[in-house]
Image (cartoon, rainbow, N blue to C red; front, side, top):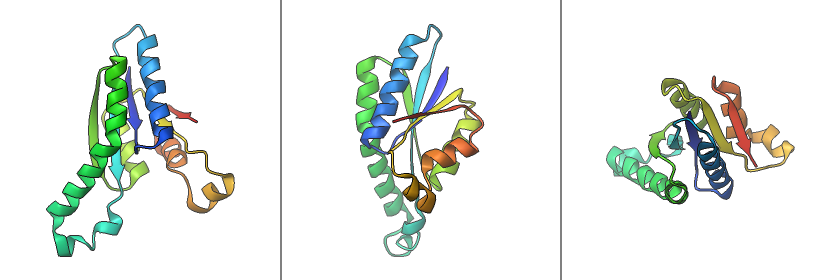
Length: 141
């Protein structure tokens, strides 16, 4: 089973990683996890004119590597095979696109548990991924 686990370094994302690790351990078949970190670079596009595209890319990669560190450590500790993908763009769209291209069997992601009013006003990455993805989505709270 191929499992895609988006992570942003938050506690809820780490819960999703641990859930996915337990799922892999419980399955008898060969399974693997791909961690994905996506940062929306829209706000930094203007900064590219001043500091350069490479500097912005390096900055976002550094943030992503930091976000992935605890997830990678948890998977190493659990002995679960994994790799990682770092992307920029619209977060939910990139997650759904990666899941489709990689033919993932499942997407497991953390839900931060915001209130329904906040989700109504600003939306939720988890809700958007669940709506766009063709693979099943498990939300871990």
